[in-house]
Image 1: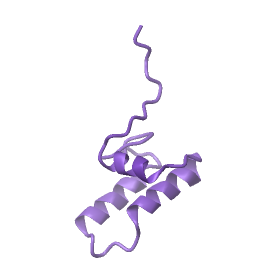
Image 2: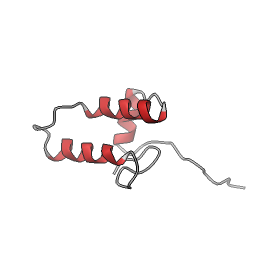
Image 3: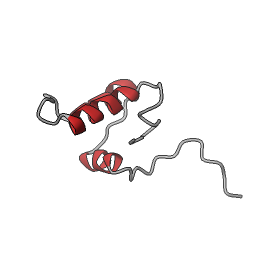
Length: 74
């Protein structure tokens, strides 16, 4: 499951994105939204983060480099 600030399957605001991704994967012909646009809109509205198309592609491929509260390596 993709993650950016939080994993999308946890009970957090991003979990709606997990549901949308699952629907677009399982029922692509029934989905009437653009998942990438919805992802960018979500992060802008709720976190004021502007994701680029490349950010979204990396996120969906689980290549996101975002790490919060990373402990120091010293």
